[in-house]
Length: 545
Image (tube, rainbow, N blue to C red; front, side, top):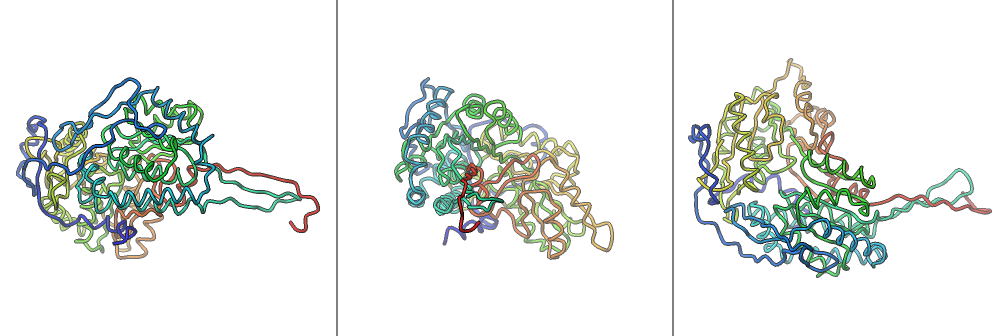
C-alpha cells in the first residue's frame, strides 16, 4: 500500500478490531464514585505484559553528531505505561548542555556545509533518511509503543509510515524553494530571496513523539536550517533513535541536536536562548503561553505554536448515523483520547440523538483495551499516573455535574494507567467536561435542535464556536448547503466533512484562537523557517522594465 494512501486510512483503520490485555503498577483502589459505576463493561482481559522485541540503543544527548552524557551526569527514568517500570535511564540535559547544543547548531549553520550544500544534496540526505525509516519501521514502532503506550498496530501501520512520508515530502521540497523577481516603479532590478532563518529551537510533545519530530524537523531541514530539538521527558526514545539514522544517512554534525530534559529547566532555557533564531512548540495552551512570553522577553524570536483543542463533532439529522457513530468513536478514542484535535464535543441533532447515544454506548463497551503490543488491541494505557488521575477527576466532575454516564467511567483492572472508554450523554455546555481539554478517552455527547422547519443551524454554530480553542471540527451531513455553510462558519483550522482525522503531509494543520499560531505540514510550514529578503539594484539603460 502506498504511503500516501495510508494517511487517508487513519480515519477508518481502527474503527473495528478485537482482542485484549492489560497490566501495570498499582495505583491504589478506585474511588467510591467509580466503584458505584462498575456495571459498565469493556472488552479486555488482564495478562502479563508482552516483552517488546526491540532494544534501547540510545539514551544520551545528541550534540554535534555525538551521543554524550549530560555535563552534570544526571539521568532520569522513562517508564513503560503498561507497568510503570523503568525502560531506561536517559541523560538529563540542563542549561550547560543546551548551550553546547546551540553552539554546535550555530557553528553548523555559520561555518558548516549544510546551508551551503546544494538543495539537491540536502534532499538526497533526507530521502536516504526516509529509506532508513522505512527499513526500520517495525523496530521504531515497537520503541514508540513501549515508551508511549499506543497500540503497536497503530504505530507500525499508520504513524511510522506517515513519518516516512513526511520526510519524503519535505525532501521533495528542498530544491524547489526559490525567490522571486518583481517589477518596480523605476529603473531597478528587484530580487526577493528566501533564506534559512538560522538556528531553530523545537519542543515536541509526548502523544505523537516521532510524528511531531517529523512535522518539526522536516521543513526546518528542507529550508537549510540547523536544529536543537527537545524531546518530551515522558517519551524521549524514538527521537534519539531516529536522529542516529539521520547521521547514518549523511547528515553533517551539528545540524540536528537532540536534548532530553524537563520543561521548567532546559525547555524554558531553549525558549529564552538569545542565540536561537526561531522557536516551534507543540503542547498545551498553558505552556504555549509561557513559551511565547519567554521568546518575546529574550530576542523576540518568532514562534510557531500548535496547542490544545476542544473540537466539535457535529452530526445533523440527515447524516448516516452508523457511519457518524463509528467516526465519532474514532475521533475521540484514537490514541487513548490523547490527541489535540480529538472530537471531544459531539453535537447530535435531537431527531437522531437517542439512536446515536445508544450505538455510541455499545461501541464503547466493545472497544478492546489492553497491552498495546497484542494484536487487535485498540486502546492502550494513558501515558502516566498524572494524566491517568487527571482524566478520572474529569469523569468524576461529569458525574457530579449531572451528565448521564452511559459507559466506562473507571479504571480498568487493579493496576496501571488503563481507563475504560467512557461515554457521557446529556452534557451541557457549561459543564467542566464540555469546556476543558481532557486529553483522555471521554466522549461527551450534546443535543442540538433546529428552530424551524426551514433549516436554521445558527444554534449549533454558536455553540461549536463558543470555545477558547479552534483547532479542528467535524461536520456530518448529506446536505451540500449545510456543509458549505458550516465549513465557512466554524472557527477552526481544519474542517473535516463526513470524515475525521484525515492527515496528509501536504495538508496544513494548525489552529485559530488559543489553539496556536502558524501551520504545520504542507507548503505553509516552509514559511515558518524562511526569512524574506529584498535586494534592489539600479539598472542603467535597461532594454526593458
